[in-house]
Image: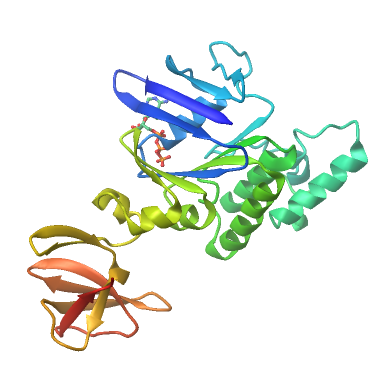
Length: 308
Ligand SMILES: Nc1ncnc2c1ncn2[C@@H]1O[C@H](COP(=O)(O)OP(=O)(O)OP(=O)(O)O)[C@@H](O)[C@H]1O
């Protein structure tokens, strides 16, 4: 189990992280979701041991993880950290990058493991290509394969799919997270991609200004976001005054009604989203967003119901 207690952390005089106290059980997958600059990468770097935390402690099982002030070489062998800059070796091949942490004493095993990992990240055709010749997304896939090559007990992923195109991303995400579950590898992913957090985590921690403001399972967080900041990660949140109370409603919670209701808005524009349209409308001079199965055109008056 990982135990993190960080009272505070700062690079300069400004506090970047505060009051982060949590634990992660073996095999669990936690997503840290938050806007750019809120402190996600800093937290992963502290856990990995790249940054020293003066006011706090990190434990893996019974062992305290000491930062760079105590270890000459940062990091522990049982933790792998996939940074946003990949940290690959540009002048050697994809295969050798992936095999960086694999022993050369068992060459046949090493070769087979590299082949297996190349397949996981769909890079078999590039095994002998120098990394410097790859695109950003291809480099990210190599870095992912290298991070899991020698199975870590704890995997820290910082925006692991940010450079990978949609088409590959979905298959790769499913492959990778299924593999981690199967092997019982504990994983913490820092992301601002809510879709990834919803589909692949056991728990989501919402971070704002260096602290967690809500922690819940994906279902609970999506259904009961505590405020507009949390809700905004899952779509265009609407803040409506209903019976004197402010309610946060996601587009899918506003349903067009064929009969007259107390909520009426004027349609401004429909955005095609593939399997549905996101419609922008004006309600009491404020923009609201809801989903519809067809293009609703413009200037049309619509009545709404709120989905129970
Ligand atoms: N080496 C550094 N020195 C000083 N300040 C830093 C340093 N690295 C990050 N910061 C600051 O710490 C804060 C948190 O940065 P961090 O990279 O942890 O955010 P993040 O949530 O991971 O952002 P992103 O999603 O954009 O990667 C930011 O205000 C950033 O400017």
